[in-house]
Image (cartoon, rainbow, N blue to C red; front, top):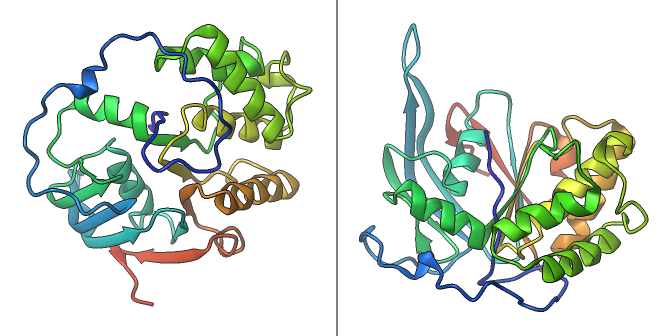
Amino acid sequence: MLCAGAGSAHRGASVSTAADTTGAADPADAAVPDAGPPATGGAVRVRGARRTFAADLAPVRALRGVDLDVEPGEFVALMGPSGCGKSTLLNVVAGLDAVDDGTVEVAGERIDGRDEDWLARFRRTHVGIVFQFFNLLDGVSALDNIVLPAMLHGLRRRAAESRARDLLDLLGLGDRTEQVPAVLSGGQRQRLAIARALANEPTLLLADEPTGALDTEGGLEVLELFRRLHAGGQTIVMVTHSPDVAAGASRVVRMRDGRIVPE
């Protein structure tokens, strides 16, 4: 299961709001264990990533020595059939799964070898995640679906509401602020999920099959939104099994059997 987070360094496709925070010292400033040599500063750098899962009959080698580079401002689609390792690779980049071997850098930081608390703080600061099945709060308004997570990440209510309204306007949901997710279309719910993922201006936006639960019209809406975000400078890595969806990215990386397929 993916967890949403967001944050700052190389900002993209953002809407400026006042940085009205709690003023408390950020625990992310505390010393962290040495994770090895310094990072090189790209949006994503994965080297020699290996990940194996235990299974009843035989171990599943989900990643088999994967190398991946994503530059700031790129829109990259990870494409391949089910079981090829693309979602595992996305989870590794998000810091939600750990590699057995290899290195992972995101936004200039080595994230492999870090503990869960450090990774959670890092996601809040740098990573926004869009889920296939939305993962919205059903009982609250579209506005509060953005405001409440933003407040958990440090924004005061007024700043969080300002940011949320800007995002809802940007994503064509400005007239839906008080509606609950159940009355929105699939495409509108996914746009709301994207707004939530952008609430803290993430360095990196990760999307796991963002059109997989949508009809054709809703899928096209989401893909067009990603194109607009990319045009505004947002770095995006999107997992998909659909060639039509992948064609909307600026670069397609194909995977098969836990490996990147050479171009």
